[in-house]
Each structure stands twice: as structure tokens, then as C-alpha cells.
Image (cartoon, rainbow, N blue to C red; front, side, top):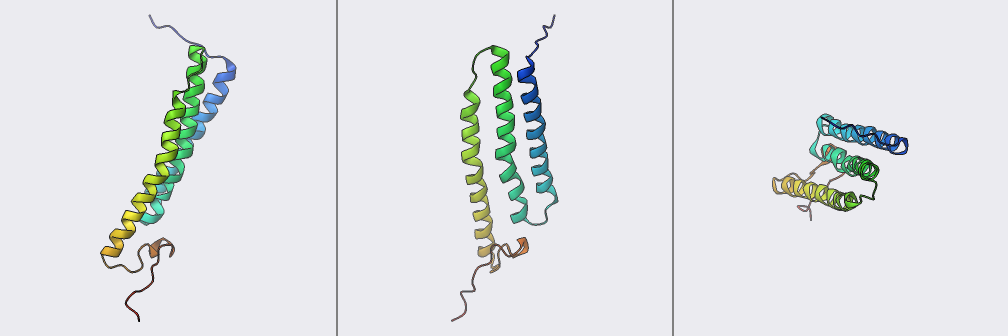
Length: 126
């Protein structure tokens, strides 16, 4: 027989809001990954939204299990710190690798299709 667990209203409202908000943010990042035209534009969607979306989901998890177990559950803070620290660094390294790849392929205007953000000077002059 399955036992039903009821959460107090003070926990249901923020958990629900954070889950919907976090899921929406992650969905927007995934749509950006699919819809944007160049690699340099596509990398920004997941890189920016993964930190905020995952943060909302982890805070919702922390509130839910704190209310469920009647004690503070804070191990999600460690996960949140890990995600907040590693996601921007990984995105930056992926972008640098792409710029390096484009430069090695002979594209002097690596990333120019992303709005001219990654244009490099021409070293062949003078």
C-alpha cells in the first residue's frame, strides 16, 4: 500500500513556482540551441540558462526535501555551487576551442557570422 505525503502550503507554493520557472528557463535555452544559426550564437543559450534554470530546480529540490524530512537538507547547495562554477568555464573553453579551430582552418574572421564578435586582425599585412 502506498502512503501519500502531504506538504505544507509554505513549501508547495515556492517549489511549484521554482519548478515551473526553472523548467521554462531550461526550455528557452534548449530552443536557443536549436534555433540560432551559428555555433557562436548557439553556445550562449545553454551556457547562460543552465546556471539559472538548474539553480531554480536545485533550490526547489532543497525546499521540497527540507519540508518532507522536517530537517534542513543542504547538500543541493554543493551541487548548485559546482554547476554555477563549472558551466561558464566549460562554455568559455568550448568557445575558445571553436575560435582556435576556425583560425587553424584559415578563417581570419572566425565567428564573424555571429555578428562580428570574433573578428581577428589580418597578420599578413605589413
